[in-house]
Image (cartoon, rainbow, N blue to C red):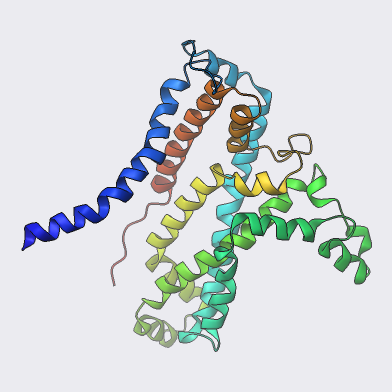
Length: 296
């Protein structure tokens, strides 16, 4: 009986795991040896050039610009998204849940179900400087001086894309944190209320410590996401990566080197470097956010 069950489970997992190994794990592993070659992607011949790609990468000014942008996103995205998600989740769960909480969860989560291409095109229309909704709204309420190029301005392009990432990401974490908060026993809040604790004190003394494991996982996901930002920047940015590398990030620079310049060896070196940064920063995030587990 049990042997048949295991065969059935293995049969179900064999095809998806095989596809994952071929199309995800295998390209990752192949990137490591390719990073030490001058392979151009379309030829069968290549030369091993040692660490030349990594030396070139170290002296590449565009890579350092892209890394600086990734680090900016690494700090800002988790901070803004986690803060907003905790705020909205706390409101939705206030005193057992506000009226219409389920409806608001759907509204918050809705951007998460849209494809990145749809989100990108939608916000292109909103940010369009001449007839876009944002500048049109600012002019309509008498704030035309605040109208800007947004995606076309060096000073506003990255912040505009970051705003779209926040808009699309908050809803998922609102649902995640709301579910975690709903599992906290109501008796703890009642006891705190009897002791004279304010809602703010209850949040920081009860809610946040009890859902910290969930917050820690969310921060780790957002750190990885900040380093892997690609699709939305590819769709929204001018160039892409512009104007003037104002929205250049490591993933986009890797893609451009591979598929625009034919430097697959160099692009693989960028990918290996990004992989190392991801691993180091993810482990560092878990280390820095680790707290003693609270049991209730």
